[in-house]
Image (cartoon, rainbow, N blue to C red; front, side, top):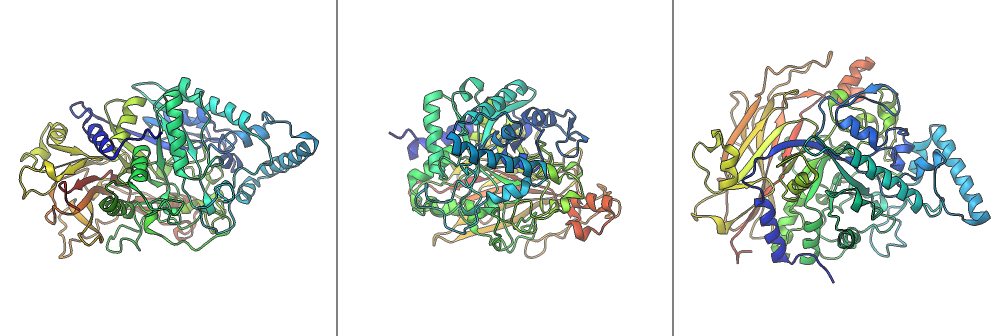
Length: 633
């Protein structure tokens, strides 16, 4: 018997979550929900053999640690407030344990043991000979078959090769060590260490991974072993396992889709992975388990793509065009691969099913496999440990998907969270109510409230946030037409943005609106609502570029352009009360040096050989959704 909320219950729950703690003061916390250590098989095979969960937490807390590849003493520039160590559930700790001769493996009989001895010998030779990346590539899908059909016959679980037999004992030991590390480093009020893992579904190389984490502690976490894609590639099966485990242990969970830009059109599709129509029940379950998605990380940005948003001059940002599987295919961006298109698709599906499966908040995180959550351009240590030096960044094909180098990667991202306190419970609650946002690595502060009629002067009020909660909803909230006191009112947004104290000034603040019209057409519009200097909008609402102070010969820049703070009280002049819509805010910094420029100058090579010279760091807030009055389409 299903225990998921009904449509009405889910809507009521969302409303309660978005108002819970509204009168309590919120603090802004920054963290990473997607970090891999030596317990992940691909991290270990790519030269991270020493940066374990303990190292990851120490780095995130601001302590110096030893880099797992180059053995230098390294340290984060600005410490984090929270971290999720999210090692792969598949083969969790197994490659590490085999290489260190600590694996707990079953007896396969003389023939099975001989085959395993050969596989282990070849694996260890690959690791010691520096060919671990090639061994990893050999495990990836090679056939461009479609997902779906029989999950046993579908080549979804390419990671469980069966060469090592039953690895459950080794995975259980690794999981308990990961849990123990989180418990040791969790310091309520100072630093939050979440317990989590990654479910790594990868049918035909389509990245459909989810990061799963819980606000609960070790006593509950040790009652289960993480669910992996070797058990099922389908998200519905993951959700059912989460429900069953919650019923059995009391542990609560959240699953976050990540890196949708290389999902091959499956992450936010109009159908399920099995090709079935999305129903209200499916949409309800997805909304319940996956209220937040990762929108920016090391493998590129997933906000939108130039082919999907041709009139958005900032759409081509850290675009990553490499699939995971070994036999490369030409990259083809699809609407289901990007956040903005997904949000529009969600409105369209809600119009037909009554439930929006893509009503998600957004965050950024790194997906670093070095054990180091590094998203700072001048302190970026690559995706894999072996990417940590300028020379090794020149090596191609680290992921098997074409000409991928360390400069193909983006030094991104971070999750910004407006929480009532720095504890597991309070941060998890902020994720549930979607009062979270993404940055591309900078500690840029953004706050957004949406309402129907904010007080005059609310934007500059000392009690800005108090007014915002009382008269509107924060990012992640829902505005209903039934809440309007005047039929002529249009949604208003109160926006405040402040630069990272250790980073660059701000260029502009934009509102991105998406809506579905009465004919079912999906639309979007970008509005410039606040900006630095005396620039003027042209007839199309475009704004001249802010300028660029970066010296490509020295990597120096200055804050002689831009502003440290920008704010706006914006009203949607194009509002149509009969159209479903969403609004989110994008904040851009002035141009600053990209990690590829730092390497170019260090190597004394042309920057064109290493990648873009500059980057405009940015933040994306979780949307606010507008819902027409009851009885409307």
